[in-house]
Amino acid sequence: TVIEVLDAKREKDIKRWLANVPLGLSGTIADYLTMPTYRMTRFKETLAHLKQHCGGEASPDSHRCGHILRCLNNGFKTIWPLSFSTSEIDLKNEYLQFMLKAKRQTAAITTQIWAHLKFQGPFGDKSLSKSASVEIFGAEEMIISEGESSTSLYYIVYGEVKVCLGGRSVRVLRSGDTFGELGMLLQGVQRTASCIASRETVLFQVSQSDFCRCIEDINPCLADVDLKLGGMKCTILTVLHHVEASRFFKDFLDKEYAGESYDFWMEVREYRKKMSRPLLAGDLEAKMQQELMNKKAKQIVAEYVGTNSKNQVNLSMKMETTIKKQIKRRASQTIFLEAEKEMLTLMKDKLFRFRMTKEFKEFLSGMQLYEVNPNTKKLILNKLKGSLAEASAM
Image (cartoon, rainbow, N blue to C red; front, side, top):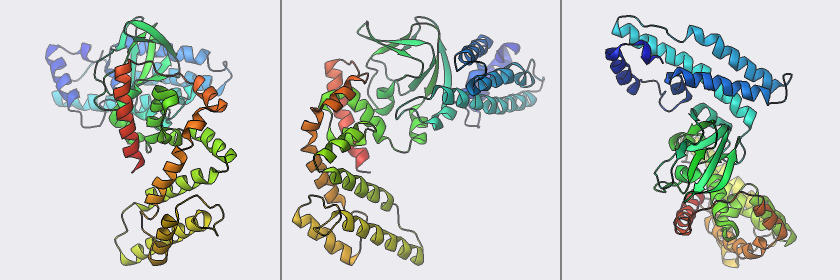
């Protein structure tokens, strides 16, 4: 390693400097390069394996992997220092320059691998690739243990991971799969299962802070976890926020001649989110923003509220009157808030029949539902319900 070329005194200095490097490098893939050289060798072996299995030598992905390998084999020779100056100041500066170059190289590597594997679902946002750190585990090596506290999310780049509950293997995860979502999304929730590498496995690890920084809307992630835990007992908010389940629910409502309920709920929720931003400071800007709010609110009313609307929704007469009175005076950011809640209640009444449909049952059967201890499952579902309701209200 870099540290091995130093004597004992310099090793102590480097460790102290590494803990205080003011470059935002902690927790990034750049840290990978400070690990033992054998890890770099295994990383290159992993890239070579990906190169062979991404559509043949002529494929674009294969060429990209080959380019990354050439960067590692050639470009890094100018980065990796074989020795350092005797001056401690020069040592520190050389090390910081090395880390900066390493960060640029390895960020490009991670992004390419991420694009090749195309991680699916709400947790697969490509913006996370730049925040990922690389971890390698040998055969039968423990990755996470049941009952421990942790907040990291893992993506399998290469290899195989077995999920164990109470010492019993319940599931096998492979390249492109993710695990660790529960501990990452819900603070205070301990790991619900152990994950062990079945063979040599390469992972991308993303911290909770990096995930929250990169993902703008957390609701689809919460809904995905809630659906995999609750299954047929999922809530209306889970269905509405889940990317795939919401499509099935919209089709079901269309068949029930109630599709406008879903459309209205989505419209007013988007209105509330956009218009909830603080009013601009200047008088002219505030006036323009108010005009925009009035215009958008009137469009929603013309589309959904009242007998003369294009797609009238089933709101109470009192609610319709209240909205129309507010529109005549001045639209507010929360003008549709109570109507949004009323519509949610109406759609909730249709949830039971939706869960009984053939389409939804087939959709659930195709998902890999979580296997969790019943007591832990109840605790997590309650936390998820609260988190989803809180995030939906924002």
